[in-house]
Image (cartoon, rainbow, N blue to C red; front, side):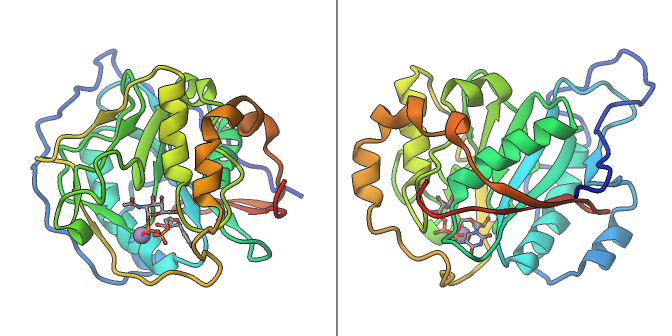
Length: 286
Ligand code: UD2
Ligand code: MN
């Protein structure tokens, strides 16, 4: 049973001034705050955040409505530290956003791509979102001039990560933080649902984008820097032994593996003060 979810409709009355691409209040480089914080402290810190993790600027009309989707399991500490850092950035950027945490129950290996698809479908049941940003819970942005926007092509927000000495692990990386407009995401039939465990689901998405003749926009290294909260690999997310095999046939599967074949059981939808929390159960190998 789903408790009456809010729908995230914009009911703000404001003038017809469009929000600027780069509002004046931006400061550029920010110093990450890597401390632990619990949800009640976060609520006290961000009283402007409304139910379900929603915010819309009141002084200008945003150009898009954005769903920020976190694939999640057992990483509360990371999620909360990220929000402590990310929320002020989103507010300064005048982003109209709603935060969705998509949690996969423990029964099966973690499947990040499948959770992207769940987030996309479930968010659209609750609001008319134009832009979808899929965000690892452990990546802290270091510049508020790294814009949480959708672009004319799918976008990769990482120019460099501390873990790779502020470079990337390889040139074509598409992991970490990415954005798609609704139509861009539909065009690639979302992510593959077949990658259980760690690795290559992000490469598969890149292949889908190329297959559909889209370019990838990448945030410049001068602003696209992130720090990754240090962590070990979870037992429920071991390296996927068939990832290279899946990847080699990825392009062929685009039309028969993705949004149109997504299967999951929705366990709960909770509209919490800081985020909309959606718990799902996924069966193995569909
Ligand atoms: C890399 C990629 C990541 C993804 C992953 C392979 C970068 C910077 N990151 O991250 O995007 O492609 O490799 O799957 O390239 N998660 C949980 N609980 C778990 C496991 C994962 O919440 O038990 C979520 C969480 O949002 C996490 C993300 O999945 O940030 C990626 O998992 P990771 O951080 O363990 O993998 P990592 O750092 O190697
Ligand atoms: Mn990580």
